[in-house]
Figure 1 (tube, rainbow, N blue to C red):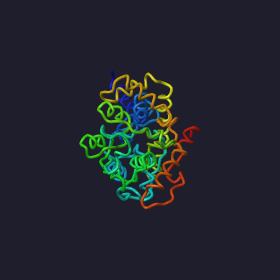
Figure 2 (cartoon, rainbow, N blue to C red; figure 1 turned 45 degrees about the vertical axis):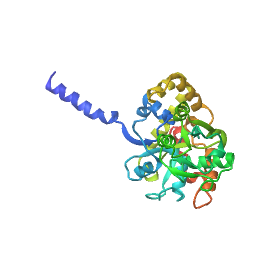
Figure 3 (cartoon, helix red, strand yellow; figure 1 turned 90 degrees about the vertical axis):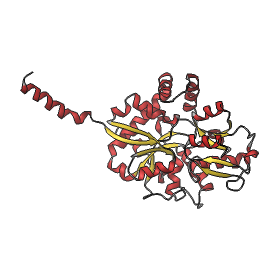
Figure 4 (cartoon, rainbow, N blue to C red; figure 1 turned 120 degrees about the vertical axis):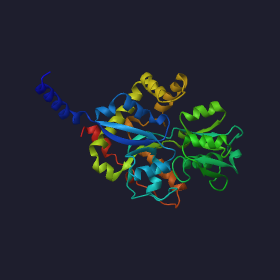
Length: 328
């Protein structure tokens, strides 16, 4: 090869490189099956097609997750929608470490969680006088637990039982194993594993509370304003991932198994059916406004200090979905 030709080829490669480069977006989530749309979008190249690369990590709890977002260590989080409301309204376990500028822009999943109890707990009455485990005392799925215990068991939080903040699902299960707590909200697929271990499912959260916006993709408004193209790219890729899951059972189960240590094919099939059922994954990655209203209603009951929530647009920006759908 002549020196001139080699130089020309090198120049072409250097010129083309930016077109191949993907923008890294740091996303922190809780563990669990609700991450399937992210895994699918990575595996099937939906993120890459939109020009972005998701740098994925998991969190031990919502408090360190929010801190990491505000410290600029990550760009987006997949978290319980209620967390956004709690922090925005000054009702969270810790003060918001910055301006109230978080918002949801992509729906991930509904309230696909199970109220699990220790083997000796026969019913709601057995929880009275004991302790339950939550991620955070004042936000997230903890208040879903309080709501179910109140409506189904007539048990009042901080009067008939106590709660301890321990972190994510694995830590809640650990608290029950160590007999530090008798009940907890447990996500999928850990709830299936917990039943095999001897714990009991006392209630199905979606069946108890109805439409509920569980997890959502969240970021801060300044970051979104400075990364408009990336926001649209993630929105489109997540919608493609969700749509793929609903339309392709076999491949979706294969990706679920690839990312879930120790899960059997039979359990993956059952979990897939739960994911595409009501209360599971958010169709087309849309935020469920009716589900948001349920979150706000429950927070008006358990948030401290008590106050009127909303409207939903205070915590949700649907414009990215609308623009992505319109091809803008």
